[in-house]
Image 1 (tube, one colour):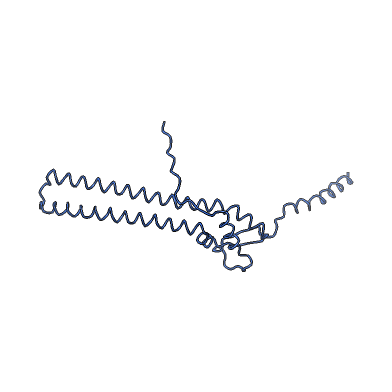
Image 2 (cartoon, one colour; image 1 turned 120 degrees about the vertical axis):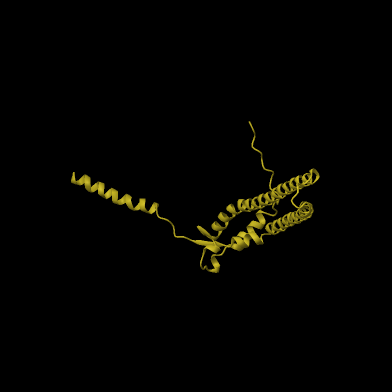
Length: 192
């Protein structure tokens, strides 16, 4: 019996180190990337940013145009109401006020839709970039021998030799020569 226990203890001692070594975590080899620089300096990103600026400027011009027209009309209606000195407005003035409110609501709806489209476009651009960056991270980490990749902004200090920003930027420029700056139309849920 004593021999059996010694044999079992000996076998357990032989197996324990191999099980422990199988669970050991390798030493961290860290690389850092400046994602702000990558997403602002990539060629397709610069072109997309310019296109988005154009969309925002178009929105702002349309907003200014609609606001100016509505303000002028509102001031005219308000002057007519003030001239009544508390009397009830006639049907024509009430119709003007109602028409102005309808135009205001239509303008708000138009501008809201345009603003939502710009936001969808921004998200779509970010998604395209993100979809390409995932595999690029793995390729660069493998090539540079890293097993951890961190955003440069999350570090206090790093050595220059662990910065892989240029590698990732070059790979992104190759993998993503262009970006679509218009998000696909949203699918409407099917009614029953």
